[in-house]
Image 1: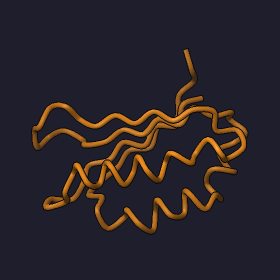
Image 2 (image 1 turned 120 degrees about the vertical axis):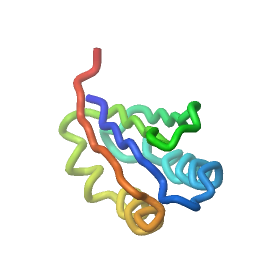
Image 3 (image 1 turned 90 degrees about the horizontal axis):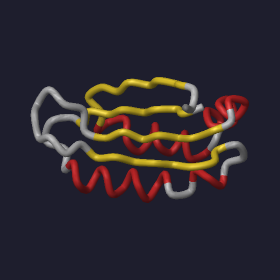
Length: 95
């Protein structure tokens, strides 16, 4: 499955720096059992009504609880929550 994390940063957040930090953090995600690949996209259309970042974790469905309990996920929440205005979490099957 693909676990999508779609983020809109708080106003005033340095979006480029936040994305760089997120990329660095998520670079270790495939060390977590069942996480097979990570893809991160930054938004290319600078409009206020757009989200800013999309993280795609390609994982075995059984890895979702492992991800939720992982130190990386805990760091994501503790280090980035204050910068996030809103987010969308969506899980989809792979094509």
